[in-house]
Image (tube, rainbow, N blue to C red; front, side):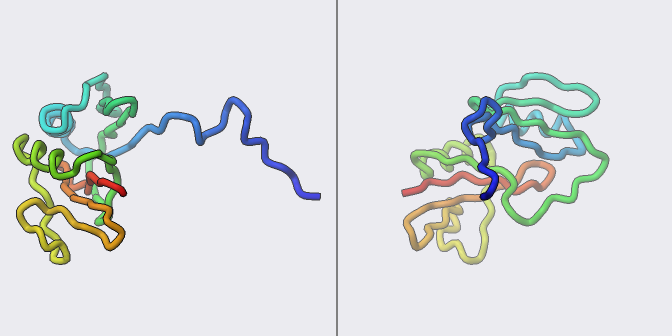
Length: 135
């Protein structure tokens, strides 16, 4: 008889808040972007990280001498109206990626065959971020 997992205990991860982690080599520039352009709330900063809050989610932006950002999305937000959010971010000075497979070069919004929509942008350290709308 196999061992049964107890997923109803008080330490269940599925119901716990997630903390996002990103690297930065310039915390002042990162704070300006996340607070000034994305509207995150500044929480604190020490020698290890810049801490921001996006809604109920804590984002720890770790200070590091070098950032080697991956080419894939590291953090994204599901939104109700992607066109509205992309337009707002563009007014804040956020530049969206213009990938070759995305026909809408003005907004950068890609429509998947399922009807989902995604748009990608980068933070000052080159971390790929996204906004998406799902059916």
